[in-house]
Amino acid sequence: MVRNILSVLGIVAIIVNNLAIAQDTLSVKKYIDAITITGDTVNHNNKKLHLNDAIILGLRNNPELKARNLEISAFQAKRMQAGLYPNPEIGVDLENIFGTNDYTAFNGSEKTIYLSQDVVLGGKLSKAQKVELLNSKLAKWDLELNRLILIKEIRKTFVEITTLQLQNELNQKLLQISRDFIENLQKRILAGKTSQAEEARASLISTALEIKIQETEMKLASETAKLNSLLGTQNIKYSSIENNCYLNYDIPEYDSLKKRIVLSPYLAKYNSVMNKLKAQEELEKSKVIPDLSLTFGFRKLNETSSSAFVLGASVPIPLFNNNKGNIQYAQIKQQQTLFNYRKDLLQLEAKLQFLLNNIKTFQQSINKLRNASIPKAKEALKIINEGNMVGRFNVLDVLDAQKNLFYLESQFIDVVKQYNENVIELENLTLTKFNYENKVRIESNE
View 1 (cartoon, rainbow, N blue to C red):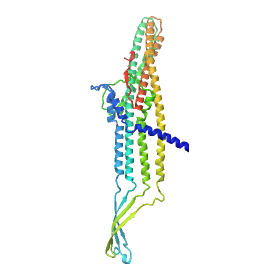
View 2: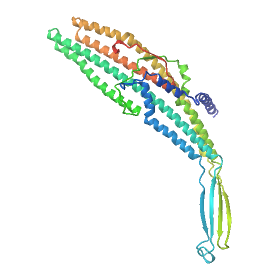
View 3: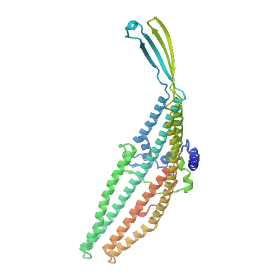
């Protein structure tokens, strides 16, 4: 028991310390501003879609964000409703009617007209308003989180589309190389220097590339449709998008980024969650205090032809129901929130380390492919291709060299894509826009 209490106290200390930093932060706004102002100058010819333009369009038009905004308004309406006093009641009582002897029909009747009003005690109305106000704040955190997710998805879709476009350009280029090679091969066949079997082998690469181009174009159409749905509009027309893939980011160290995790809505929202649960507990405690019901009326007695005023008051006796269960529920939910915060904090710290490791690995792979593997493969293809013309290498050697270069250049594009996706995830997690400089593109992708 003592160990559990100490554990909870330790978690409380962590969450209080972190939430003190995250409370009322403007980090989300600063991050969004940084994302939308670091793009290139807006292109007004409607041919190229720039990233910052796409993000602004998405933030304005995305239907999910509009729905989140309405949810905030809904909680504000509930807050207004929670502060309203209960309506008074008006009633009429008729007694001693339709009886016998002196009470036949209305001869001895008593008529009472009264007004009844419940008096809410214990500050229930103000406490209920506070709960709805904090629900509204939680809805705002959800809105901020959805804005960040939208920005992340738009940026990742840009990366995906750019990757597919680059892959398609590479495939088209390699297809042309294969066709040129087959054309030269056909000339050698006519000259009797090689057999038609080698032409059949060479045509396999061309066929594979044609299929690959068709698959890439279908994926490109799907990703373009996805981007339009994220932007919340189908009216925007563009022929290409801005290429932000070839950027070399300056990534800070783990300890520096770790401090920024608590500023993100993923964790910062817990401050409002705890405040809301505490307010809910106070509201449930106030419900233990019963409300007072007051009655004021006027009574007419037909039997004596007299009249009188009536005053009354009543209050429930909290004998069987003292709202203990709801109070305990609110208290337990607070403890549960502390553990959920600790769980999310640990998971985000692990994700931070995972992303940093991935980025470092992809950066090393990019440098190795760009500076060593691909240049060597291109040189090898050139030597083998020239040697094939004079009979030192056969067609299979040329085909293997072509496939090797194709594989390495495709791998380079894929690694660049994964590098950018992990950087986007890291920026989203830490609300940090990293500095960058343009990479030198490899010759085959210029």
